[in-house]
Image 1: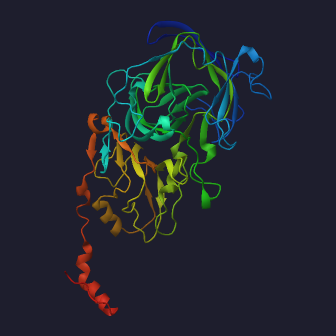
Image 2: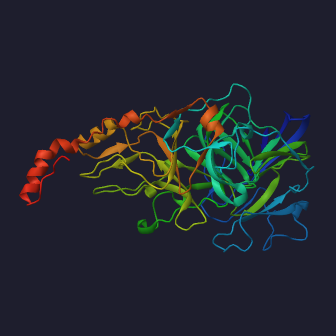
Length: 497
């Protein structure tokens, strides 16, 4: 490995073993500096462009982006122009998402598709008519999922827990867990079904995409849009976490309303890759996910050969520690929408497909207020996970990598001990969720649960309803005072039937 000039030209010679053959190859990787970019660190060696919703222009070799047009008759260095469109061609300008890629060989240069064996733990159809899914009205929880002892690559480790709808209707979502132990070699993965939000719990993910490279650690989220090819390496040897997949829409920042221009997740804190490409003419395999089924596509060149690109259909990451919490500074709670990092719209206005919320370190200063989440029922389905740290108020030993599920209108709230302590505590300013980040996927949709989640994980347990047994009807202990107060008001007393 050596570097040439300030533009960082790196050349390496390595041997890789693919699925079908041992390929000796020369890989030339090239990344050029951009206008404004972040600073690499020991844990993250890559630079990023910043700004959610921006239209970026990035070139690894200066001058390779066409000037004032997208598809010239002949691209510089005989590159091929290729467009990706993430929305309908006629979508309004504010919603239109696309990217133009200038690559060494176009994606169309492949050798066809072969269906792979079905993954029994992967699901994409969540209709109750599907015999492979289940319905549950009760609160459920899962202890952390195991990391396999055998070598498993990222795409092969995905297992589905719950979801709604299906990709063919372009409406719905799926929630998966992954636990992988092997870096992907000459293999890339592409999800044709929807956008994926990947949330590591254990182990960094070194992700190579067509637009460039990103390093994603626990506490960060990574979003890769439908149709973009990527590859996952494991610099720490393992990777474990969650995946939130959405069909039919894209993640966007929530509106801020009375908050004004600032707060919650700031657009400038979202990080996007810079152009980086390989020169590699060895055998590659691309795994496509289509309607929850895997297909294999072979080609004689790397899919990561994009020398330059521009557009806004680009994968990105976000460090959840940068989230700016807001809350009540007088009394009572504000609705949980104040914890929303990203949202995805459904086809029904005002009813989100997904609100992605986090609970991270913050101050609670509300006076005369019961501070934990009040006991409640609502129309949303809730799925929770813990990225790191501890999350209090639970009876089930909620741990990083575990999960919980509550269907709409299922009553829930903290255990009795938490209620009692919060009802009697001295109300001083206090830090909560210190050293932890929990997330909630909240949806207006009803979910079904997979066979894998309900029958094969070995980690499922129901929330223990005994946690609320001591929530007795204390009102009856006050009947003499109640009747005295009613008498003083000239009202009849309460009597037993």
